Length: 300
Image (cartoon, rainbow, N blue to C red; front, side):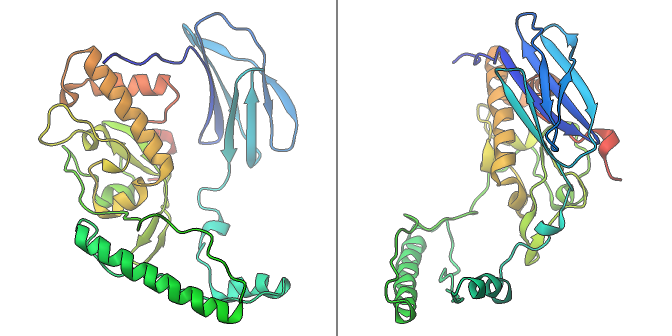
């Protein structure tokens, strides 16, 4: 196994408070102009400064919500600026009253189907088999009821198996706690940030009132195995924190850290538990990753 090749050319953009941070990596001196298209369509030229060999950066104030597009003629980066918890996401659950507005305007109607999923142990194979039978039987019954009102109703596709979100979780050298997620408190070995809401916290969708909580490197390192690192949904976390961290965006950030840590462990011939976390954080940041909430952006 060898350390993967790092990108020689890259362009990235990210929001830091009220400023847009632009980074370009290039192994050769590069004077290509950077053009930024603002949300209102205005195109401006951005001057980059070489902050260290091969790394060119710029920091610009942002005064418009919306999508910023940055291009050097070859690479394209984008950054979205908007409210932390916009009102349109405050309650995304549908209801008969909400659906009736659209249905009435289009000549349709509203019919509710039960989810039909029994309360089972997702780690028990026999229970999963029984659940498959129960769910598909329920689906056939719901389809029959629909056809009484809409005779031409056709079932196009279903999932191949029941989706199980949570069963067992691996215990790491640190388990991300509920309070870590709710408070967003800083963790010294953070390698990623998770800001996704908790889909079902105490029965409702919960949006954080801070920028997100930090994922510590220790939650990627197993408690009892020397040569294993955890990635994606396998990290060590309590159930409330896991609800948020299992989503795709934090999964990608966590997995980038896991892959980088694995490569660095091999190249330095050390156990993942003994890896220099500061060096890992530096490598991730040089690759454009966000490893922590900047202190100046914390909402204490």
